[in-house]
Amino acid sequence: MTRRAFVVGAGGAVGEAAVLALRQAGWRVVASMRTRRDDVAARLHAAGAEVAFHTLGASDWAADAAGADALIFVANLNLTRAALEAAPSAARIVAFSSNNVAADADAATYQALAANEAALRARFANVAIIRPTLIYGDPRLVTVTRLLRWAQTLPVLPLPGSGGARVQPVFCADLGRAAAGLAAPDAPAGVFAVGGPDIVSMRQFYAQIAATMGRTPAIIPVPRFALHAASLFGVLSAEQVARAEHDRTAIVQDALPAELAPRTSLQDGLAQHFSAMGGSPAGARS
Image 1: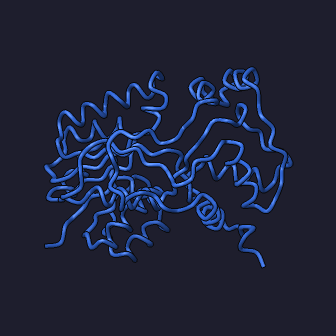
Image 2: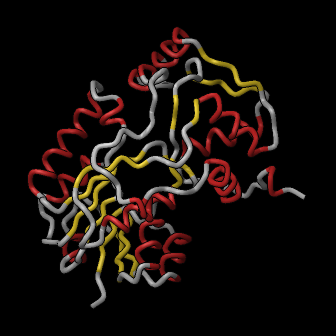
Image 3: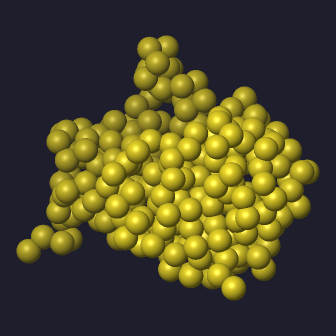
């Protein structure tokens, strides 16, 4: 019997990747998006998914989700929890949170996410919560897209903090594959931190971004006093300033099944990200 999934947030990079991974695994999929994106809808239709348009704050999504074996919410967890108050029954629920719930537990933003994680786990015994690290691999993911654009055009890359903090970026297609795998009825419930296979310092991360462009801009650390000044003008949030020197590697909660572990290297993932932006990565040039 073919399983059926309902995916919220299918218009985004990770949501689209989850839909494609589910289709490759043989699921019937309703791909729900809030904003009409004709290019994404065309790709999802071509993959055999049904595309629908909903807003989580409305109630119309629940009717299209009725009867689904799995509900996958690639959306802000606060919105997900509110929407699930009216959720139809499903054998499996997959929701997205943030690795910063563990890495930056004292910040108000992540305390709120932690509270919503706890509420979902108390209500749904079958929920799998994914805590991704920094997500990249698609132009819709603005943080790394912006850095790639800067590295392409600027002689200097400003690096928040000293650059010694470690990061573990995760490729969006790997994240979609993990979400699809956790939707399976025999997959474990729990909270799963998901980061990529490469752990690098922020300076190394910026250097790899520059290398993808085939350029060598100067990477200049921005001291804390300058970061605080940026927060006063709204360029950075106070929470972002506080995290500048903190590691943002995946903090394991429950063990992710080994077959769902991300496998795209940072070098390959950045090359794919830049290619999707219309660029030609340095390693691909003749």
